[in-house]
Image (cartoon, rainbow, N blue to C red; front, side, top):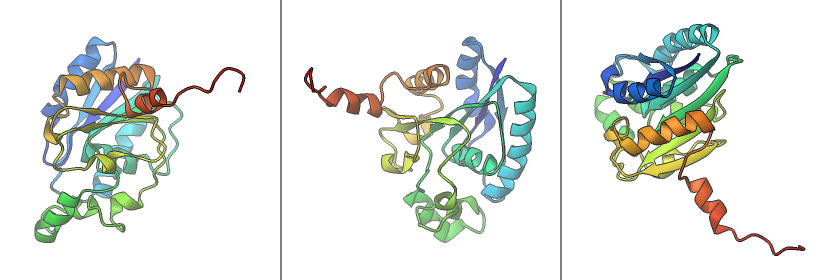
Length: 212
């Protein structure tokens, strides 16, 4: 059976991923939600624990997929950095600060000593998230929120992503958005989104005349 591991974002809790997990189970996937104390410890500290879980799930299932909201997607990137995962499947990132967040940079000035992940998620060029390799073991799709005041749409892009789409909701509502849930399920099944920026770009390019 194919397994989907789901992770919440900074300040979130595991229950926030339950609506998405429930829909995935309806579609025949087995699911697991990994909850962590996001305000405590660094990204690499969380990633070390996550790496062990990812390796265990990979050995136990035919194919492993992952879904991460915001910081959850960054944890996945950090956890699989430098390891081998032969049956890695697809990854959906919901509102990920792949190029960092200006909001995280702002708040890191005041509370980074309480939440070290804030500085690591900053949009500063030397932040941890901007030093992570862009390549991942998973075929990656990214879903951005149209009304996101935490992570800019441009920052959600990941070099090498398979597809990217935008849904009409706010950053914190991505795990609950019907559209985001539908797009996540579709990507895990098909490796692309039903309505995507990639598709829109392709449709905008007129085909060459016959004979060219």
